[in-house]
Image 1 (tube, one colour):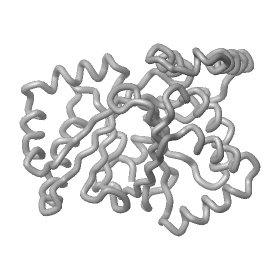
Image 2 (spheres, rainbow, N blue to C red):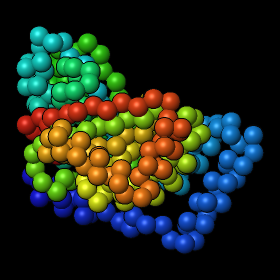
Image 3 (tube, rainbow, N blue to C red):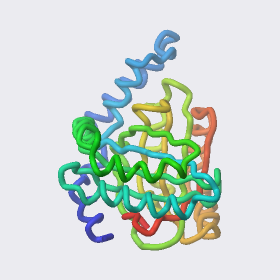
Image 4 (tube, one colour):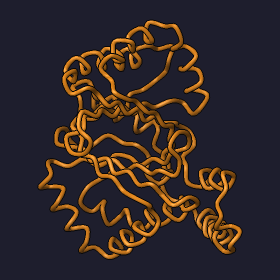
Length: 271
């Protein structure tokens, strides 16, 4: 399974660096957007302009978050496996599973599912085919287990496309940042410079920003052997030039941050 995901990652991968011309254009646009009081009042149009600059554009990832009744967790896991593997195995849908996880630190009895679509047209196609299908009926088995559910459509940052972990096992950390509106481009530039410090010790699995649903959110996904290894790697990153600056700027750009520790479900492609 991991080898198939790796081949998908190779298929999706592309240049992750920006040409000199592209870098100059990005810096120029950034100075334009943030150079006047009027520009600082970010509108939805500006957010979309930022998205064109920072996104890969080819894929859309759907984040589905389910909060489950504590006494029905095991029943939910069985129903979720049937539903999500059914989506994965249906060639007419062309939906890929990125990963499926249960929170072990953070809000308990909460499950995260990330699906990949061929851009918005792929999502539209899948959504239409799901209506009144066997998958809809399979989803009904989930509903009695849930206390709430939310969904969000995101895109990958161009500099950090989704990739499989380099080894199996361990834990995943999903870090979610609620940005100050209008700061997405500045966030991307900050992390583009700072990510190399972290990459010396751990390779990120992926990074996305929201486009539909809860807006102005950024998600980063990391994998560690365990929480002790996470602590050591984060401490080592602080010794590398550039990481402290990235963290400092991150704090100023975000309204709040969440760190959720996840364990993969048995059918998750990423584990």
